Image (cartoon, rainbow, N blue to C red; front, top):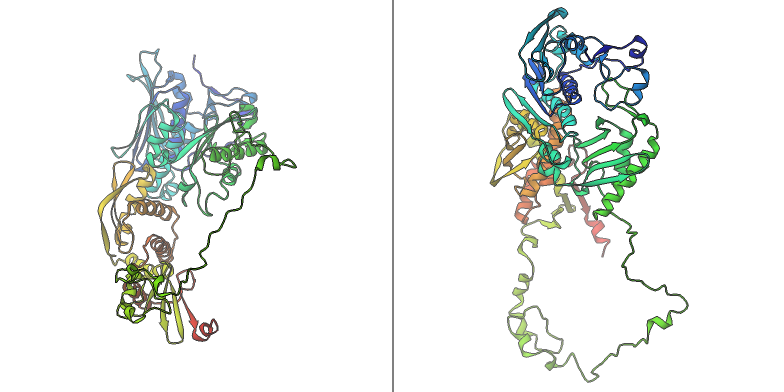
Length: 605
């Protein structure tokens, strides 16, 4: 007898219904979750043309009988629930019985499946207009779903799919959300015949994060753990100094199910207050375990939104847990309540005198006969040319020092002396005389204006100069972010970046635009900032998109550039600035140049 059954209408109507197939990633999510629920230990995902042509999920799970193989494509055919009460204690991924019916309605589907105890398997083909064919076939134990020509019968929806790299990025996101929770399962994912992920069974959750995200993420997180009567918290949070502008490594799970929660995200961010600057977000992988009766996962068709019975309590627990973890790892203030073995410090009050002991004032010895203005006060060694930084006393022979006066200039570094008309102040400002007083130039903002105009020219097909790095820098960015660099290779090349994808999750930085730093530490930050810029949604109008991108690349370049190493470089920066279209304001409208009138300078004296 089969496991599947059609839900009664009164139970089906209580389920949050809705379209589950929004894009290829939706199909991958539903099929991979079903494979996990089937008890699979190996799950393989095959993608062609970002899911437009083929999406295939193969597992070695429990398989289905011939009857269930046909019934699984009916709406609300599920083995997960049987009554309304079962909706209150869901521990599996799928439960609605909508996924396969929805997929079969917009694609051509082939299913091959066999239970381990059966000698033969079953093949079900659902073609155009719902035509169904079944056959008995030889098949390995488990299930093999092949979904072809997605949205073939709804061309309007197929037309509005994004580029292959964008759709593949969404597929990788859904794949990651399932694979990260099950280190005990081996996963593979390939695209157009190329392996993107080959995940063996991992020893622990952190090893699975390492396999998925790379060592740059796994090495920057610390353990998170707390047990309470309401919820059990496990997982990892990132070090404050590794917080980034871009989102992407923020994950919440409850009872193994991924979910989104702006409310609990605030709890995490509150714990990082005064540890990270505004506008950046730390990585976190937080797993919550609670009584399934205390959480409702049946409020959204995509099953990514949930509701906790005691959400305010969980907020406080999560905040305290993250705060304590950061403090314990010396990232913030913490309190150590373990006083065993600690030195007992007496509390001093009115009996302070018995502890302080006798107090003795230090004695000061003086020589009343010493005359600092006498000729003999300066030793002979002080009058040698080697000691040119000592000025003579008023009663000494001053003429013997005049011929060495030019040596005083050696006390100052050459790069801080005004050569020509410029002076660099603390690497932030350039000071130079002007007709009406003193002109002060903000170096970072001047670079921003210069780089903005260079970026506009580069985006308009005029190639920018590339500065080749002496030693290429490899940066692990993860499979999802690597696609960004591959998708925007031509754009980055025009801007002067020489960045090549390497492997499945790494890029190699061979060169950067002229004026950027090739220092490995700055290159790592540069790649992170590029991910942030390239991840943003693009504007519909090409001209506006170019302006926005030029502004972001200009800001990025200004923040990564080194200050002028000499007054000559500072003068060259000023000359380039005043050759631009607008030397007074940055693209964002901030002032670059300020003139201090001579009258204001006179008032200081």
